[in-house]
Image (cartoon, rainbow, N blue to C red):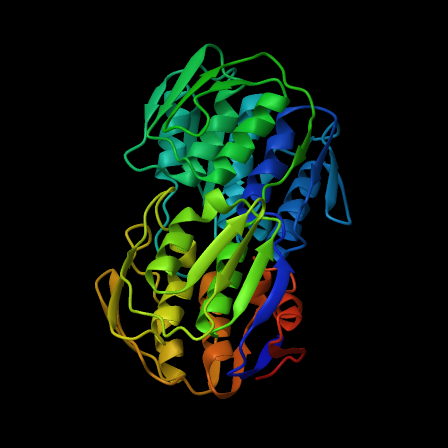
Amino acid sequence: MDKFIINGGKKLNGKVKAGGAKNATLALIPATLLASGTSKLFNTPELNDVYTMLKLVRHLGVQADFNDGTIELDTAGVSVLEAPYEHVKKMRASVYVLGPLLARHGYAKVSLPGGCAWGPRPINLHIEGLKKLGANIDLVDGYIIATAKRLQGNRINFDIPSVGATGNLLMAAVLAKGETILNNAAMEPEITNLAMMLNEMGAKIEGIETPILHIQGVDMLKPADVHTIPDRIEAGTLLVAGAITGGTVTVEGINPLHLYSVIAKLEESGVSVTYNGDSATVNAAGVTPEAINVTTGPFPGYPTDMQAQWIAYMSVAEGVSTVTDTIYRDRFTHVPELARLGAMIEVKDNSAVIKGGNKLSGAKVMSTDLRASASLVLGGLAAHGRTEVLRIYHLDRGYQRLEEKLKQLGAEIERVPGSEY
């Protein structure tokens, strides 16, 4: 397992470009299953999660080629309608194949998903929604077995605006007979990217970027070529990297509107953020950041995927702050590892109370999940001395060669291969 070695305490400065959105890609790839033929996805990040999804759809019979950020997917030969445990266990997003397979082929057998070690993320919203569309669903030996001659449109109300359930039911509903209304649907940019792709394929979706989606089912979809949106979480992480080190960092190739909640909190902390077109610049030179509270929420609220990074940032801010996660209530496995760097954090229920203003010192820390890994890297960048971040395979699920981008900004960070730490 590779690790990072970071010599921290260096101010980051310069420009860097964000890649394509991981969470969007993981929905766009399964969406191609809804039509027969070849689709192309541009601006695709080279990430472990993307390769995991490609392995899964290849198992189903998709011909997939991935070169220079472009995936070409030929779905004409799909013949396997089962997503087995050995493919699905690595990543919860694998359940996205459920809706498309059922909608187009009338049958799907998908293992209950795996993925990050933290937090209950049940898929009951996916299952109950498909039942409302007329699917017969059984849970047998750890598998979801779904059948339907043809799905039927219906009204579906989400108790919470689940991104995963919205995406899965959106893909199922586009081939259902009649109209489907998804109420309290997720509005994340990744869902917008998916909905616009489906319309490019011939779907009839109205209300995109709102919490109420109207879908008029069609008989058939066609392949499409689609550009993946920039990764707002990678961009936010890089902006926080500039802020936590007291530097000036410009992140290019982004949509600043997707980052408004993160940018607003950075500005509240005392650093300046300017944006122009597809770039944003954080300037923290000479600034002692102030402690600012954050509560995560569905888009356009502060993203849960930036919660761990904000806790790392608040560890060096002056004062006491509270970070509350309303999305995943137990997503705090990074806290004891940040404490090894000298951070003073106490977790109470679904909140972390951070006593900032401490000088962080390098130490050996261990990643436990994707975003926890990013917070430890940020902590290591701010800490004085040497930090080793172990198990960075978690990080590689969602950040494409992060160490190279940080090096562009002046960080002293090296990836060291190895098997025993």
